[in-house]
Image (tube, rainbow, N blue to C red; front, side, top):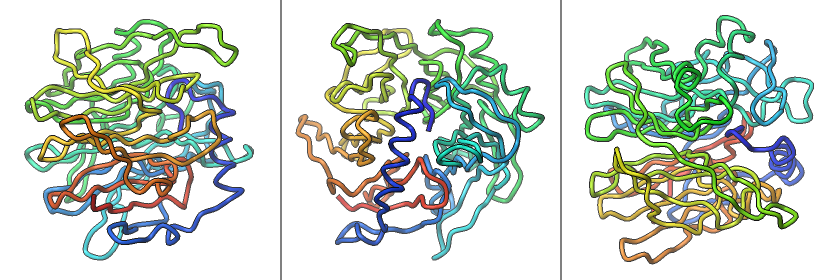
Length: 368
């Protein structure tokens, strides 16, 4: 998955590692760990609907359409292969299919991998669905993908009874405002509700955007941080915010993937109050892809690559952070390239795995 600065080499290293040593999802079945859906295309965010079914955003597998060079310098091609999928009633079915997606093209070493398409998902108070659709590139490149490209870097609004529309254009907002400065790039990813408003983390733009009845505004921006590069010399590292969640105190919390060089322990969770600079809430994580709080105020942090995206090791991690700061990793080694998470009413945690691969993604239920 391209999130602003994931290098082509790192992307293919993750994919190749899985292809060389494929893992059967059943290998990870154990008490309190259950695979509840499989066969998904680059699955990402999860949310429970008003019907109590679980919904997952599938970023798709791109296709044979027009191609562009994304923000990481990789060639990605368009296809209407993204989806919103329902898991419930002992079966899995695609509620909405044919959504825009870009991914490694058919001539690449790993076609369909590292897709950008439907990423985050939630339901508003009226029970209507809202999802983010990523891009991972300059929004102006959408025009070269044909008419379907206009659906990328946007908010998708849908109904459980059928019907959807491409709504707020985060790509156009980034192009016009560029709140964080620097290179124009948009990749809407995580999404959350905060005091009745919709909040989106644009991982490509390095900012947090508030969506209020069709009006977009900047909620927060994140600055680059200077870190040691591969050779030891200091280099600027982009923050790459991927995930957002409302905390027990009513503030917004933001998890960052970080950009190149993706240092182990370099990712942070920020507490953000609109109008104030983001404050570090917890640190020492690696490549955060999801965060969530349970009803007791416990924070769960999901890492897509526990040993860094540059390591070539696709094993992620789910870390429980208690209110007193105590940390515990749940089911170490079992979460391969996770892409999103949510917590059910029963306290169980639902996580998507194999989130960078087409056709083999799944959803697991973890009872902590």
